[in-house]
Image (cartoon, rainbow, N blue to C red):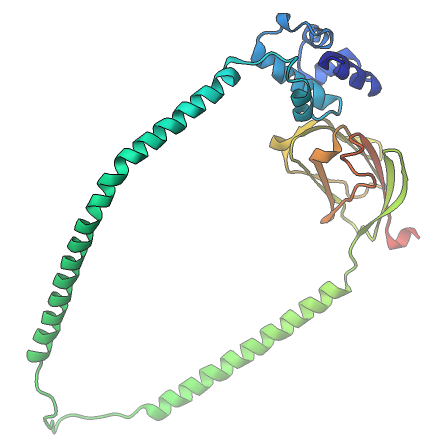
Length: 302
């Protein structure tokens, strides 16, 4: 099977027309037909041929990297790929030769550097010692009596001030501990939302989001590229290609009773609802295309 036939079959399985695929990928329809028929000569160039195939594969739910690797012999190679191995080997050989020429010169300088550092250290130590000796010799003699000198002992006042400051700090610490304790009790009392699997059937799964509260917030992250549709009570929030450059995408679906996802390539998509990551009911590597429905429930709904 050729790569064009593989892509066409995947498109027909998803019930995606060429016009819809053209709107999604922004690739002209005649180029899409040329890819399906294996007529790569009419494409703008070898680089665009590979790029168009990757966009086509992503839009129909296939892994573009695996697809290009599997049909690498059928895809035109660019001049950069043909010459990359030769250029890389030449670069490595040049680096080795230059490093081997510079190493002896560096090693020969090490003893000189060590000697210079030792001399500098000796000079600094002599300067410090000389300055200390001069300072002690020029100081005024101490120990003479001064009848006019008055000594005030503030030790009692200092002790009283220290004690007062310590008591104040202790009171502040106790108040902070009480506040932290109250915050911890409040957090423990609050209930957290939870995702529970209700039903799974061949790539279609249904979950219940219990204790959702007043807010339902989604966080969507992609490590590659996938087609993604998101609805809340039949209101569309996203319906387009979703890739790593768009991540993270945060949506507020508060007040919605039902959330629906249609995913073209699930291995590249991570869904987080109210801080909890959704675990796919079916392994996304085994089932790329998945449809997920989430029923939003609160205690008052029961």
